[in-house]
Length: 193
Length: 193
DNA sequence: TTCATTTATTGAACTTGTTCAATGTTTTTA
DNA sequence: TAAAAACATTGAACAAGTTCAATAAATGAA
Image (cartoon, rainbow over all chains, first blue to last red; front, top):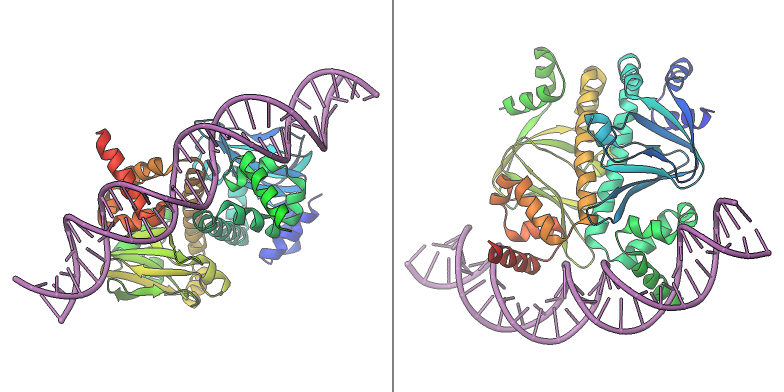
């Protein structure tokens, strides 16, 4: 059950088998049905999660009711609202399963326990946070500099597997455009081929 | 000279006086004249820096020659291209002083030394990376959901000191709009008062 | 299988933001 | 202190993206 998690850890740090075992035992599995929520706006995020099956979206709803997707998470990705989790503040985000999903969750206390007793874990999360930060930094630049057409083409190229599992509604909310406009972009691109 | 750095460290972790001394001694001061560069596109970023005086901008130039500002850094902020620094890749960014500035730099080797010999430092950078990630995440949502007018007003409210030190050209490049359009926004807002 | 719900497409009118070019203002520097 | 350089403003024409409403297509649940 925790096999994919073990592989994910091994990718980032070298942890003894015993320590790996101790760390992985801090996680609890949870099954989330399609359209159910792992976190809702206003709740404090009490977990950090590792997806072993399915697909989630992490999103925000603004004043006018529009949804902005911060990121998706499929198998072997981590999910949390790091803002709410680390600062203990009510979340501004929703985390929703877009497919029947399975996720391994660790609580804040158990994560603190790991930081204290397994010093390498501190490194694991530093490296992971760095990676997600780099990815977000690249996305920020792309959003500032590229047209919606180009961002759509980039998305397909960068996440071909994920793309196939998402509706255009979800992709539009990630790209930051209306789904009607995405539809027009798709038509334009199809015409060019 | 390293006093502000010491205070910044103390904000995040508790490090003994001796360890603080060891860590701070790994930094070297560098003076950067206005309009000079700490990093240019194509170079590998070999440092992480702590600004003790002045103002920097970290930006990207896209294919069409437009500049996108990822962030500014004034006194007590850290600067680096974390992507290039951690992955050893050529940077896609420029880091330029917008005022005569002073910065304390630590090399990659010395940072590794600190990680190995001062375990709390691992925590320092994990926490700092988390914080910058949270800030970027909020900015991403704002960019996806808010109009340029609102982002401009938010910027002034959030960074009143910084705002006074920046030209409208720089602010526009941060907000992701043309400086002409920013000028029109300013006119509209001024008319409302 | 059928009916209801969700998702996708399209067009027209509209809003937001860009581009270019001209002009005025401020700041630097010799 | 004068000239040059950088910065800011404005208008007009244009491009990118939204909104709303109607319709079609796909999916899901009973």
